[in-house]
Image (cartoon, rainbow, N blue to C red; front, side):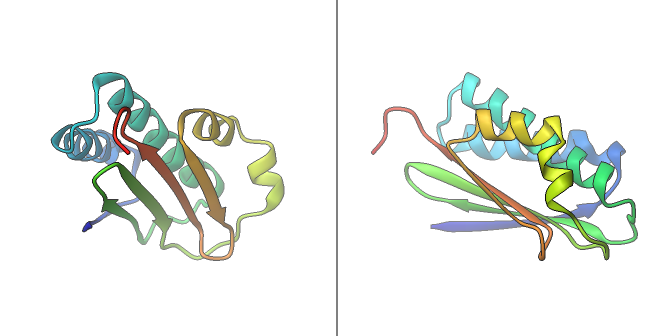
Length: 124
């Protein structure tokens, strides 16, 4: 397993950098175009969720990629102070999109992290 860690400012103007980094990494590891498009949407929705629900942005996003032969696990953490509530998760369209496009998805409100997994099609 390889692990890649990206720390980037929590600003919407860096969204394209996050999307490009993610899509390049998934492309490098043999994911197809449809899977890569899903990844770009998922990562954008996670960042948008944090930007909308945790207004402080003095600290960075920390994005961790765990690369396996058949899948990549991505964890996005918002390093800012603040709290997320179950209500913010239940009332947010971003969460529904993330759930529908990822193969596995979970969140940790206390640590302000969202983790998703994308499996490579045709690889066990």
